[in-house]
Length: 429
Ligand SMILES: [Zn+2]
Image (cartoon, rainbow, N blue to C red; front, top):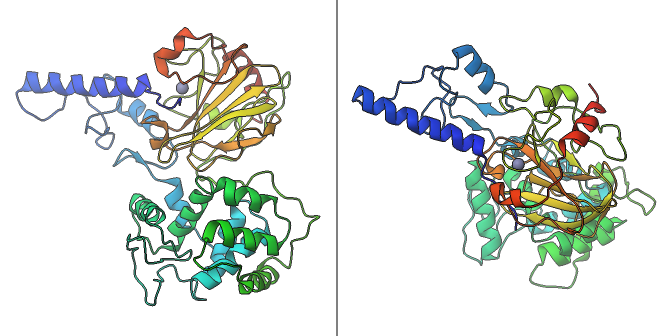
């Protein structure tokens, strides 16, 4: 449902560019657009200046410069995920796998459970290029038959998924980082109910190893292989100091790591409502060229009562108000969204999070500050800059309807700016 937000700012930019181009061609008689003076490296995807006509070089640079991960030459944002995939730490692949999973919020026995499984799947090598039946290859063969990589992905759909992600990241499918990212993506999409949730609820390494083996690896020859648990226990002792007992705190959900997100903190509560991002006032004010219009008490969304809070990709999104999750959606390559029925009976909607980053599920009870997901990248937000879209519907609505853009203007969305502004002022400086 609700997903496609066409942001008029972007459209306006493109239209300006097209008009400028057309006028230039008509007036000069040559196909070289020079009508707008702007820094040579400030170009949009059409090769045109992205700044409004008449903007000075300095203003244009100021407008276009501060975005995290923004590459002025390509006018694109470097992928957070790609950066994360290359930033593995550890003295060998086993430790890199362990550290990656711990970094995602898994507890030591859960990460060790993966290691026990991967140990056997990869013929004890932990080599991501390993091919079933012997040998190694830099890239996966999508044939639906031959297991490949640390999980020995065998079904055609899962093989294709790895190949696609590697292509998207510009790396070979035998890259350890992209395989780990793919594991995490699978756990947060098709394997959430079967694997991730039971894993997060597990309290010991034996259960964790079995869950992964039975529901994620799904090897061809059950029953359980005891060697996996034996190895997992060994890795838990090696990397986790043996940590893993029932008394340890299990996270309600795993925490996806982000990059580019500035340091920040949860804001203070105003009438039980907090700012829906872990950030600071300075970080939000510093977002250009389109800062959230925090100084305006009136609505400043582009088409209906809502807020677009521009912020760095990877910024932690949290519930602004207590309630119950009534809808989540996770669309690969696009958006992840959450709707929450507040305890005040308003429906709160959080949109444009990164696919695979969701940290709650339908039915979950949340309090103000419960992590929901991470702000997505530009592609995830359909051609706009990274931001959280936030809106509120009053009773008797019980969920967020699937409207987008101007089509939403016929619904009674609440003007969220006044409470947002107050909550903003309760953020750290
Ligand atoms: Zn919006």
